[in-house]
Every structure is written in C-alpha cells, then in structure tokens.
Length: 405
Ligand code: ADP
Image (cartoon, rainbow, N blue to C red; front, side):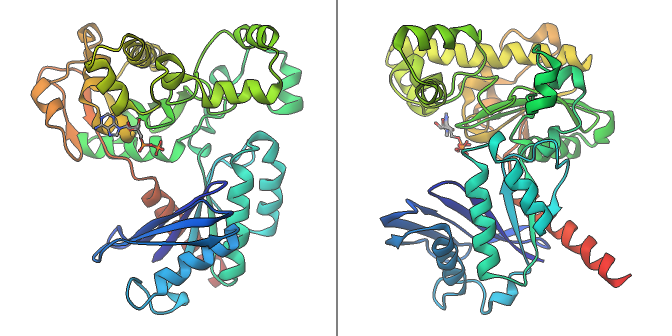
C-alpha cells in the first residue's frame, strides 16, 4: 500500500510518501512558512535530486494541493495518478482519553478531535486543518489518525493522576497523557527485535531526545509511565521547554515580572530549557560547541539536561522493578556521543555499561553496551512516519475486511 503520511503544524507540513511493502519513503519533503508569500516547498524523491519551490502558499489546503502536485510532477514526482495514493495517515498530537489507538477518520472522529482542541490548542487545530485539506483533495481516499498520546493511554492511574483534587481530573481531564508515543512504541519494538526476545518479557526505557525530549518506561510492550504530562512541557529539559519544576516557581515569576498567562506560557515553552539556561542556543550541537569553548552557562545547561535524564533512568527502573534495555533515539539521542556517555557514566550499580569505542562510532541500529553490561544500551533511529504508514495500512485493511462481510 502507498500511504501519504502528513504531519501538519501551524505553519508547516512535513510529508512522506511511503510504500509499506518495501518500507521505503518514495518521496519526502516539507512545506514551510504556510500563510506567507515566501512559502517554501522542499521535495526529495528517493532516487532523484532534491528540489525547492518558493511561492505564495496561503493555507493548508493550498499546501496539500502543492504536495500532491509535486508527487505527480513528471520530472520530480513518483506517481502518475492521484489514485496511486491508497491512503493518508495523519500524525495527530492529542487523542485525549478518547483514542487509545489509531482510527479511521470519520465525521464522528472529526467531532471528537475538535472536542479535544482545548487539550492541545497549539497542535490539534493544524492537525484538523490538514485532515480537512487532505479530504478536500482526496475525497475518496481513506484517512487515518495516529495519535502521539495513544501508546501511553494504558498507563496505570498511579502514573497518570496528579496530586490535585480528583474532581479537577474528572471535570477538565487534567492528567498525564504523554507524547512522542509513536516513537517510543517504534523504538521499543525495534529494541525487542534487536535483542531477539519477545517484547512482553522486556523492561525498556526509551529516551526520545530531539528538540522536544521525553522518556518512557515500557514494561512488557506497554508504556507504564512517561516524562511528558498534561502537555509536552513536563519532564526532561528540552531545547526551549523547562521540563519539571516546582509549580510555584511560575506563580512567583508571574507575580514578580507581571506576566500574563500567555506570556508565562511562552516563557516556559519557548525561552526556557537549553536556551534559557545557556542564553546561547536551543540546539544541542551548539551547546556542545559552547561547552568545548569553555562557556560556563552552556555547561550548566548541558549538565542539567543530562542529569535529568539520569534521574529518570533511576526512577523508571524503580517503577518497572528492573531494566533490560536503555534506548537512545531522536536527533540528540541518535547523534550525541557525549550525552549518551554522560547519561550512562557511573551507572554500573544499575547494570548499565556503555562501550566508549562503540558509542563513539555508533551508526544505524546498534548495541553500544559493554559485553558485561547487564542492561543493553541501544542506539535506534526513530521512524515515526513508518509507524503511521503501517498503522494506516492496518486500519484500512481492517475496514476493507469489514466491508466484505
Ligand atoms: P525534532 O524534535 O524537531 O524532530 P530532532 O529529533 O531532529 O528534532 O533533534 C534536534 C536536536 O538534535 C537538536 O538539538 C540538534 O542539535 C541535535 N543534534 C543533531 N545532531 C547532533 C549531533 N551530531 N550532536 C549533538 N546533537 C545533535
């Protein structure tokens, strides 16, 4: 099956056109600066040169029209007819308590997605716009929603309830949801394959470290706890997000600095984390360079980032009562030798030993632990788009089966 995978943000759309049989992305690309006269579409067919188109793209409907047009283009395209797009798979950030798995998008599902907007006011509206735009251009093509939250939806109450009045959970659905679920699910499944053991028998900690960062405790293939919470702000230090802190800190800052709710929200989401502490950059490569140049604040940022991950390795090992594998993924997890080394440093007491040479030369899917390490330390590149494409195929096939009956 050939699936168009769409990840729609407020001003950008990332896409991949995936052949599920070969698991190859026949083309991938991105539309950026949607809403502006200088929007950019970058398109990379898997066996041809990358192209870049600059022009006015005022909304998601036009952006998706361009994406379909470039897939069909005689010079840069990979299909000859729109009908070759068998299905569309959408990344949807927040499924709330409604969606515990991927779903075929129907009018009832659209309504439920709209009902969840309050939980993800920044992310769900562009996801919904993307679905509507894709429906306009491909009215007869099945569309599937794959949620960032659903892998975590079976967490026990002890992990998802906050220490606030229970009525507030019931009234406003304030609880831990967790995000990056597609990535945590993918890398934990790959880890089980690499270790050649049934996932049901494994206790795995997955660390997805990108611009946004989160960890999950995956016990027997189920996420039993995760660092992100009601929103993606909780947990680890991220590029621009604060992660965990005493909630009264924000009340204090708001009072002292006279910040409005929206200013406080921006401070925590956009000006905190690595950029906040270092004052230099939200990008780990630049932080590492600044540390090497002797920049003190960059060093604080790096150390706080690593220490928080280490703390959660301990916490999640305790939560699961053991640990078989620690997986690093995401831009930082896959590429930063230094972060991996420092997280695993002096963790022998937990049975974690990282091999310096393997860690330095890590590529692709790789076991980078020492031979005597009880816990396997793994580098696994994530592939959320592939999970979305495979889930989409499965849901569409189930639907076809139902129609046959
Ligand atoms: P997103 O969460 O937006 O998908 P990525 O997963 O691509 O982002 O991760 C981006 C992060 O990965 C940035 O902080 C970047 O600096 C970091 N990164 C990428 N390559 C390296 C590297 N070689 N060393 C350290 N950090 C890296």
